[in-house]
Length: 428
Image (cartoon, rainbow, N blue to C red; front, top):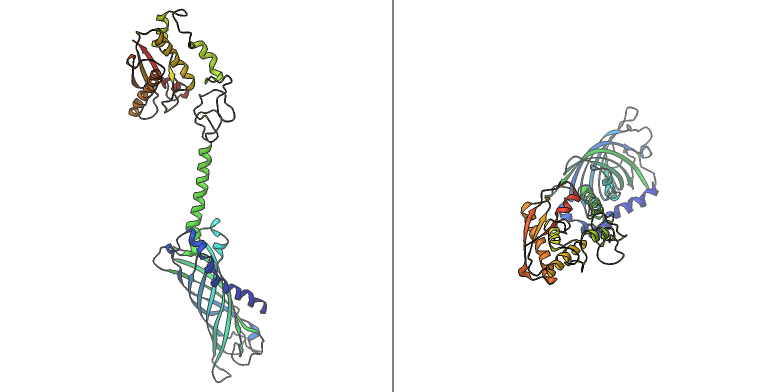
């Protein structure tokens, strides 16, 4: 029993030193949101040590007849203090000489919420565990005392373990097993002889079941802080990380490079890109190499649009019938890089034909709000208008308007929608 004294006293001191850790917990949550006080009511069985009984005196194993009352204050969600009161009625069994003793005690103990220390919230929402230990004052009265005072006064040291099950935000069911050692017990527990057991004697083991009731204005007791708060915060953190991973993996232009690594997030669909998402353009002319050849065959290059190379009416037909268009990415009024050559085609034609005027008509695909798409189509036409004016075409020779949504293609096809996100030319 001597070996237990130091650990028990250390346990009692933990609650007193826990105030040093209070600020750490308070930084993570507002402890005023929780009740810290609670009362405990319990009852159960006990077993006094046979070493402290005189020969011929015995008790049942276990024996009914012990009750307890406690008040507990938690400094934070892990450490607290407890004031405990207890009463044991100790009497003989059928094989014993008759006796009856009454044992009263009061103790001040430190409390550790082991459930929060060990993060029980990782696997349970309703189960908790307290450890408690400390010391106090006890006395025992007897029906047939051998001393004149009729009472044996002593000190006690106590250590126990208390599993808990949460019934509601304010009420918990608990079980408790505590060992109580008496110091300076001068009489045997039956009260018939002088005790000669040195040191801590008169050991009593109590096993109880009871209710813990939170006191305060808040809805919840701080015993369950990790269950209600910490676990939800951890879950939210995991959800935030998953959402970030999902966002990082988005590949808007579908070039095989996630947006967070993509240096050119609006690459034309289908062209080859390097590891940074930039379209391969070996000759550095601003047109992806994979489509440059087809553009060369379809559109006239700068300097090739003259009456010597093609009749004016054929060139006008190409422009008016939509063979030359400026294309755009989804929800954007910035022309695709490869479409700048189409604008250059019109620039050269209008410079060679000073009397010609042109109307620019913008279109959008069917995705989104029709009113928004009408506005976007006009913005696209205005963007091409601005580029033409900046390229030297007189503004009075140009006009622009939004054509709204082009519903002539299957809107479920991304490739088809790319074809209608455009600006067309009408010569006048």
